[in-house]
Image (tube, rainbow, N blue to C red; front, side, top):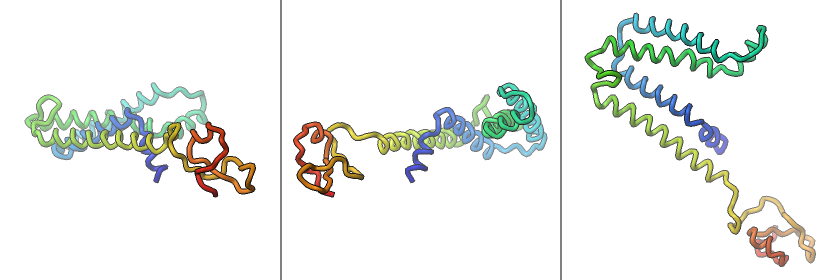
Length: 184
C-alpha cells in the first residue's frame, strides 16, 4: 500500500494539470457532444499531422532504426500525449464551432458544466496535495529526541550477553550505558 501511495504522490504537478485539462475536455464534450462526424475526422487528422510534427521536434536520438525504436519505447507516453493533445484541442474547437449557441468564447454557457469541470479538477489537485503530504509524513525520518522503534539491536551491553535497544537518540548521546528501551 505504501508503494502505491508513494507512486501516486510522485506524480509531478505538471502531469496532474494535464489530467485536469483532460477532465475539463471530458466534461465539456460529454455534455456538448457534436454529432457531426466531420468534427471527429478533422480532429483525428489534425492530431496525426501535428502529433507527428511535435514528435519529430522532440526526437533527439541518433541515426538508424535501433535509435528510433529505443526512443519510441522509452518515451511512449510522451509520444501518445503529443498525438492526443492536438486531437483534444481540435475536437474541442470543433464542438464550439458546431454548438456555437452553447458556448461563450471557450466556456460553456451552462454554469453547471463549468462547475463540474472545475470541481473535479480541484478534487484531483487537492487529493494529490494530500497524498504528497501523507507520503512526506510517512517517509520522513524521526526528529532528534523522538522515540524510535528499532527493528534490530544496536549495541551490545558490556554487563550482559543479550543485546539491548535504546528508546531515543538523546539516550544514545548521553553515553551512560543504561537501557530503558527494553530488552529484545
